[in-house]
Image 1: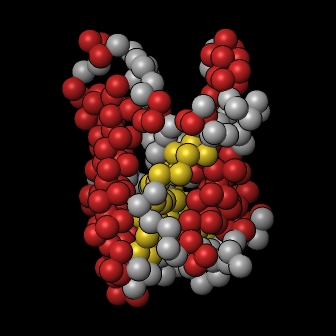
Image 2: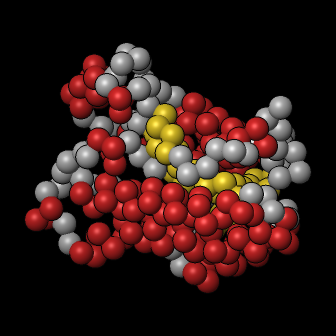
Length: 250
């Protein structure tokens, strides 16, 4: 059970944080994994070296996931080196500053939409011919509990994540006839590298509000993604699965 032998996965933004854990989890299940970065080559090299040292098969690709030509190039390279993309995980994300709506600019709002609507759209469109031809595919968008929580002052990120969730739901219905599932995994606040300098009082307040009274770990998010990629999850589609220790039902 839960084997991904013979499958090819593409995880964007996977040189660090949750994306790196997703790539490792998919690799551990037997998938060939195309990893992706854009800005930090040294960090990407270190992440891919760790991936290869674990005995997993894949490639590391540099590319801007918000640019159509770049997306098409990367998907083409994956097809040439590993095979067609069976499992797509749009995970790449930019910086996410919180500020009152009066302080945001539309350009910043647009950057959120580019990462969380435009990029999944471009990636999905590029991978669909292969998925449709074989009548099998997995698209797993990475959302956030902030959409359910309505976190403020965070309107640009929250609204873009809400749009991404809507995209997943609509695509799940559209692509179901081809046995392609589309789901969203929405992590809570999971400590990774980007959270190293977060204020301690905010961390303490969040932890105190968690029904499980413990922090989640990246592997718990990554393994949820891996499960959704397997044959065992073939009838799960259109869902938004929060991995947050029951935080959004408290």
